Structure formats: C-alpha cells, structure tokens
Image 1 (cartoon, rainbow, N blue to C red):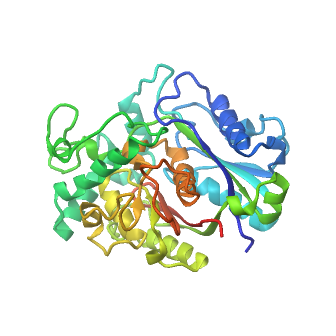
Image 2: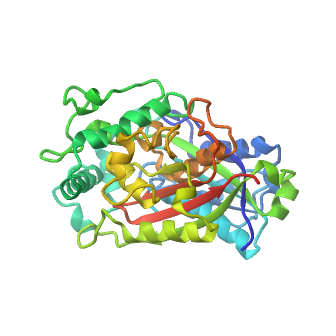
Length: 401
C-alpha cells in the first residue's frame, strides 16, 4: 500500500447556497481546494464526486462531466459515486483506490448537496420523500418522514435496551451546538441551546413521530454545502510542491455494507460499521485508545452515541454516557464532533463524509479554532454512514511525523 496524504481541504459555509448552480458548486469546490496549496487543477490526475439527491432535487446527472468542465480536468479519470449519506466518504475512497492502482499520484474528492432553492427555502415534504428512497421499500409504509421515523425507532430501542434516557442523549446536541459556535462554516454557529431547551416540548422543538422519543433538536440539519479534499501519494506531494511534514496521512480506511433493511439485524451494534472501523484501525496499526480526535455521523443524537461505540471509545450502551461525562468535549478524553457534528454543523449529504475527514485533519494539524482545538492531537477516527446504518466508511488519520 502506498501512503496517501491529505494535501488540501476546502469547504463552503454550510447552510444555504442560494442561487449557486450545481456547475458553480463543483467549480468552486475544485478551485477552492487548489487555491489552498497554490496549484492549478491540471496537477490533479484523478477525481471523484459524491452526491445523493442530484437527480431528484437538482435534476442533474453526470456530475463527473461537470467536474471535467474545470480547465485542466478534461480527459481525466473521474467518476460520480452515491452511497446515501456516506457518498462523501465513498468519494474519498474512490480517489484512494485510484492512487493505489497507480492511475495517478494526485486526486480530488468532492462532495456536495443542494437541498434548498435559490431563496434558501426547502420543501420539507419533498426532501422527506427523496431521502426515503435510501431505505428499503418495505420499511417506508406508514412513515411520513421515513428516516426520522426509522431513527426514532432506533432511539427508542437504544433507550429500552440500555436504560438510557432522553436527557442522556440530549447531552450530545447540547455539546455539539457549543462546539459549532466556534466553527465559522457551521450552519448553527449563531445558535446556542441548553439541556432544558432540548428536553422542553414547545415551539420549534417537538416529537417528530408521535409515541417515539426523537425531538427536533435530536436531528441534523437540512443543508446546502460542498467540501473537497486533495489527496496525494508521496510522489504526488512532490508534484504539488507540498511538504509531507505539513500533511495528514490517511493511515487506515475501510468500507462495509450491511443489508438496507433495518428489520432482522442488530442496528444497535451494526456489524458492517464495526467491521469497517476495525479494518481501518488494523491498517493503521492503531487501537481506539490511541485516538483523541473523532468525527462521527450523528444524523440523529442516538447515532452520536452509537458512533462513539463504533470508534471504540465506549462499550455498547455506554456511548451516551461518554458525552454526559464530558469525555467527548474538546478538552475531554477524545474530542468528538468538535466541528459541531451533523446536528449543529449541518448535513449536506454528499459533502458530509469529506467535511468530517477534513475537519479531523485540521485538528491533527493544530489548525482548528482555538476554542475547539484538541490539545496534543494524536490520532483521528472518522465514521460516516449511509441509510439506516447500512453503508459505513471509516478512516484513521495520522498527524505529520
């Protein structure tokens, strides 16, 4: 295996891209990453782009062709990937695989989602329907908003099996909003919440599905946004003129897929997620105890807890308590979702996995905002999922050494 490094990370502010078109989004993502290291797009050998709702919400296919519109990328091996909310992570793996095969020495992974219209408004009913496409058809019946309903069931099961309360899980969004205020790219960086607000059912905050515990504050944001990473081998870094000493290494990576149907499997201990994370750790020659920076896929607060368990920082059923005890704080045992996570940073589906890796790289380089910077960052883990805890993309990142 050739070592693969992150040479550059770029992202938009998450929230509303207003009148920006899809071609402009991809152009900005590519050029923005190239500006970070002062190279033209022509120095990139390969590419991949991840998005989930481009057909249904943007009426746009062949995203690879849009990437090739950027001068210098025409004629290059580029592909579009879709793996639901793990599309961004999958785009990163796509580029890594190309570099491993020797198709190139440098590459760019781009992810985006445009979920709102040019005025910044969203069609909640349409978005709920479109996101429902990423579930098994048999598990959509009777659900108005498919994914919040599915994860409300997961939340109830987690609480029942482990004796966890709504208050325990509420510690996750409270900490993430506290982190997001320092992330200039976070969607909710102007909003602060308290434990009492998360638990109080009034106004904006309500139970999403009657009879189930998921509340509005337990949910991630519907978001526009893009993110991009330039990846390179050692020869690629030389080509880019970027010193290895200034780069984070993707020391381990893996992807695994569980059946899309939630019924009939243990979603509280997702086998594919644990397998992918274990494989990434093994590739990196690392253990969970070595990690003190992480970004996990908290599409809903219960996934913040389960994600904490998947990366090995808590035993099954103890993930929520890890947050309650303050261990996930930036100054805790492992700074988890110091970006604000999907709940407060925002969740532009195709960009999410890329932004998780990029933020973790900033942490390892000591370039995160001072208020969220983990002291003496040693190793980072990321866990990006798609569907009902179905597709899992995991990475382990190592700082310069």
